[in-house]
Image (tube, rainbow, N blue to C red):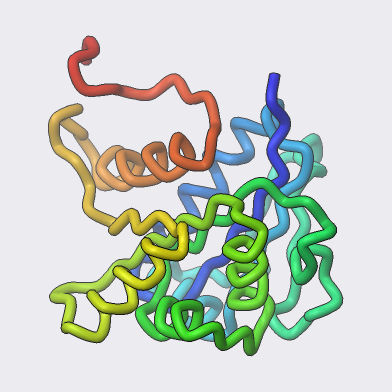
Length: 195
């Protein structure tokens, strides 16, 4: 079985629930994880508190999930700030357009943007999950530039063909898609499969 070295960046876009359910899903996939570094931007912490009514510092994982480590966004000495650390993939979920724009411009001003820059230069998977609507031309040009550089743009656009019954089920259609793109083996609905 493959054991992934994963980075998760959570930024201040609306849609903190995407980040929360992504982290919950990773806890259930810990047998596929070697290590998982998580970075919240300062704005992500505020949005998380506003939308979810709890701070990310209140995240609770089972005592068996020791493969996750939180890093401060200003810690440029964290392992993921260098390509020599050998991470396999990075997911930024949700991804603000400001973060996406800084990554597109090569502005590595914090740990999230630096780690994303490292993933691009090392030709590793960088999956950006923007949660914005509508897109303006600057957003689209930045996404095109990043896609040309090797990033995967996976908008937080839920699918409905699995007939999700709850908001969490709907959000999980995006989360599972993102983790599949990152290389995880998931037991999830696939088009043409049984409901």
